[in-house]
Length: 307
Image (cartoon, rainbow, N blue to C red):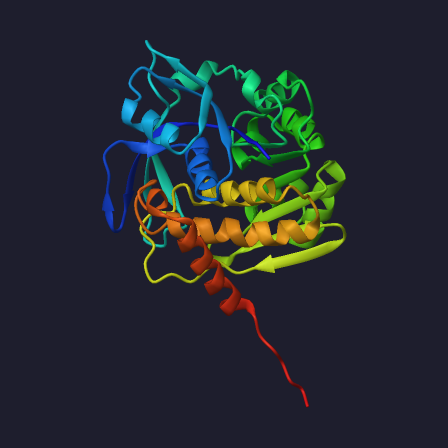
């Protein structure tokens, strides 16, 4: 199945307790597309960059067989840029600079070659932009996956609720789930969010894993314990990319498939944090993914004998 990815392709400048970078490749669609290519899934990006976006990055996408027909290049404009500094715990960060640039007037254009995409992953953008993507598709995708954040809950809640109503799977963190639902209990929060439209709710808990709710069932996984975490930027997008790509690869949308997709997404995210930006995920091969999933299995499989 084809995976259509709508999200940012951007520049990041990152500082953590382990070092800092100059302007490097970032953006939700970037991490998702790279992750999809590792899993052998054809994806297409719908985004916008400026004339300052290097050809070497475009070549990297092309070598990974990512469809770039929906990537608009505004030659006189500048690419979205974000700069941030992470605290010692790597769970909190300060935004040092946000330059929206060409993303401010982003009007998604769906190429004909991706109109038949069965899986649509809407990265963290204004919900009005996300809605416009659905309106521009000739056929409703078989599965629509939504990523959003508390900023849109604060500034565009009514539009966000319209988008959520058209969503099959929503992926948010625990803080966002509580804000969206008004419930502290994540189980109650998931029930409230189900009532808004999505059949499946994923609540991410950072270093504590993720929980999947759907079909009246709950499935929880831990995050893989790592000796070193250099940069959490892009981990959530890599998680979403692994999740969506696995589902596109299998072509089924039931709870059991999504349980496996959750593991794959978590495994992919565990690579991303090991180096700055996309550096580590660009090195990953499919065999590496198998080994990491095996680690997850060993971490979570057990037998209890009460006799």
